[in-house]
Length: 386
Image (cartoon, rainbow, N blue to C red; front, side, top):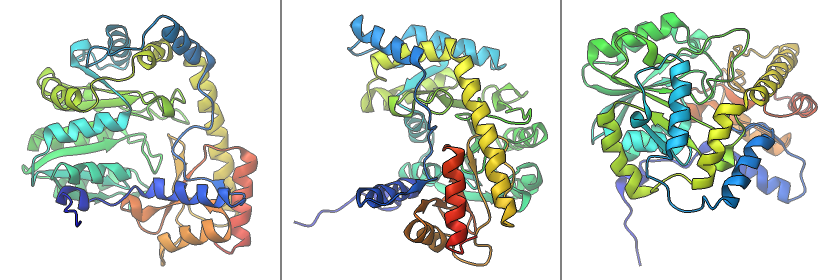
């Protein structure tokens, strides 16, 4: 039998980050010691109070379906957090709680994008944005920020040329994956001006909002004048609270979008896991100290790894947030080949910049110990890769 597959699926490539992780797992299964710098998750355990809250919820019998958009306690807690961040336009009625931030993004794309609609991305951009746009039938326009050390402010003129009245959706991720850049207020105001001028809906992906360094301020686009009703604010629990496997995220949007997206949500995942939502209440209301401890550890590792690369003459735009950096490892060559050599010859797993729309670079996660980060750089040097 020959199966015919949907063209929307055939337009999409498998996740490059998961492909690297799978290769690392295969080598480890063969007994190889792999330093995995490809992972997009904190290397800390979920804080104990969050795990205790989940256990208590299980013991209390919170194991059935919840209301589709989320339990009231969690939506109230999220709304309070958003208000603290200046996003006072959102109430519980503006929220959908999802099984992971990725599901939240998927529902947004499916709700807004029709065949042929234009989606604008800021490169380097997280790999799943492109895939989700294509799965929804959208077309892509891309703006490269690499020449500006991944800062958006210097690329605003390019963005102005790229977007138009035909642009349906713009995705902004700050602090960003894969680059760790935090966009300035001037940059965000430039985005606002273009969004208002061309009537563009903007996703503000704030999944790394709690992880910034050197006093960098992660601006929420929805707090800017003119953006209250055209911004979809997305966040989740995976990164800041070290809850990647718990699968809990959310987005906040105007009620009319929530109503339409609720159709996608209810017919696909029904609801986020009941007891996990109760753990989310504890995370968002009582875990500031643990979040700060993780943030400080990432800050120390960032400085340490930057210094190691500088010692080898490798240019690395300094990240101000998240836990990634993108060294320029193949300015005149093939970054995919470099990453293949890194894992096969040095047993160091990284992700090629090409996967994010930025060839010549590699994404490196410093969600690892200093000892392992130093081991990785030593191996890359011994293999003449840096």
